Amino acid sequence: MRIVMLGAGGVGGYFGAKLARAGEDVTFVARGAHLDAIRRDGLTVRSSLEGQWTVKPAAVDDLGGLPPADLVVLAVKAHDTEAVLQRVRPVVTPETAVLSLQNGVRSADLIERVLGPGLALGGAAYIFAAIDAPGVVVHHFLGRIAFGELDGRRTPRVERVLAALSAAGIPTDVAPDIRRVLWEKYLLICAQAGMSTLVRVPAGELRAHEPTWAMYRALVEECAAVGRAEGVALAADVVGAIMQAAQALDPAARSSMYHDLVNGRPLELDALHGHLVRLGRRHGVPTPMASAVYAALLPHARGSRA
Image (cartoon, rainbow, N blue to C red; front, side, top):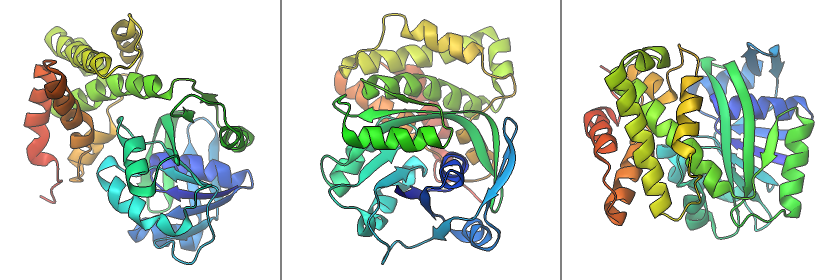
């Protein structure tokens, strides 16, 4: 497949490097020192589970003049989505599949609004990885993808994407209800990202203090209530299941939002907690904990070089 990876950070870099290593025609869209390093030395993955390897794929900052893509993988931060979708237009045709692996639950709607209906595949990435240095991605653990058509059909393009991911050694599930899968991940991310960033401590410390852990659970409960108001078929015991998953997180686990905050980068706050608060207001569902997280982190949302 001719694959364009929009983003070469932890998510896009890791999965794109595995696809390139398996022989797929992968082009990374990156920028700055990371782009320069990939062009010069290739992209290196240092994995705690799989060892180290380097691939030398194409890497660009402009897709003009390139042939159409079979698959576009959206792996940039949520606040960059609309801008990067405008840049990918030159390689998108009605036959191109656009797979989002972003956090949150808005990406598919944005893809179809910017690029046109019928192109989006919903997707969720379960991975802890990040850029360690220009041209280097460090992979800590996990590395699985769930994806599917928004209407749940098992289409030929789903089978093609599944075949490519599987051949690259990426554990992949085709979800018959990808919207439910996205919301289940959203429940965990809103709580883990919100709390680890707000309190500036890892998961083990969050769990060690009963009032703090109670706030974590309240965030999960609010998100579940809003999801049900949106018509998502969440399981009756979804809150318990998400809290069990949170209990199993490595004690040192934080979140990408935490790392963005301490490094002065923009936060995915609006796509996560801001979106949840707005949906809650629309449906008349109270979201006091999400509103508190949103208000407290909003001054940092655009990042800071201080």
